[in-house]
Image (cartoon, rainbow, N blue to C red; front, top):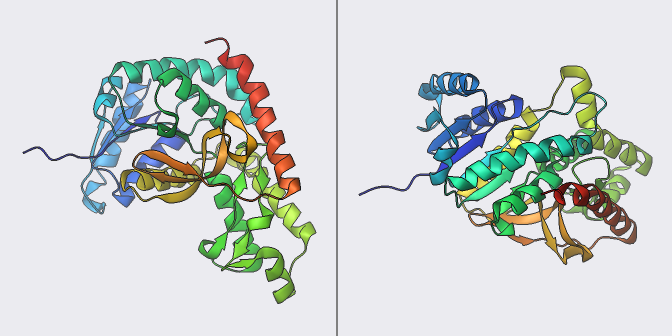
Length: 317
């Protein structure tokens, strides 16, 4: 009797992809991991290196390098391939280059007979997730982008650091484009169930000016890291592993992913970062937060920026 095992196919073994594979192995989340890269030697080398760590891993994982044909049996395809963001370059500057790359990747994956879930991490992630949905023909709930999961993590970390509270007890969201037009949802930010604004009053610490500066550091974090080390990869790798766990273990977890809006928040036909319930079927439902007027206006601006960038590009395909 054959036992069904989970298979994750990773497309792209650069900084983000290899960091994701390493974190995935350390958490023992999947039974099989296949590494696929245009640079076959790099993928093979990563598979060898990761396999040598198996004696220290929490559970057995079959790790091997392969081809797009191996996606046929994959439950989840994670795409981290594509051109990297260069110093001084915005995520949206990457759109033309990476959309063309993705067309070729998705066509080959679908030709294998793949019928699982796509998880996209390459930037500009909202636009490329939309492109994967269009190119694949899969239901929208089975095409997910990493969205603002990392921005939200940065937000929670900096808030925890500012108020000297464990970041895991800080609950706050960054929504919108994973990029320059993202926004903090201050109206729903809390620490242990207490609104951040009330927490400041109760503890006589902090100011809105400080919080505004804190958000700017969240928004611009990637630029600061790229200036110092050339790329960001550890944080997003951990975020992708968290999403992988939520999907493969059918957790129904609420995570800020890039998903398709079909009227939620008053917008349609756009992939953008919002809280959503994620499980084995992908996005179960979008969680609609009751935004205040300022947040609604900023979110609408984020939607418009994405649509203006997306439409000319996808019209070519």
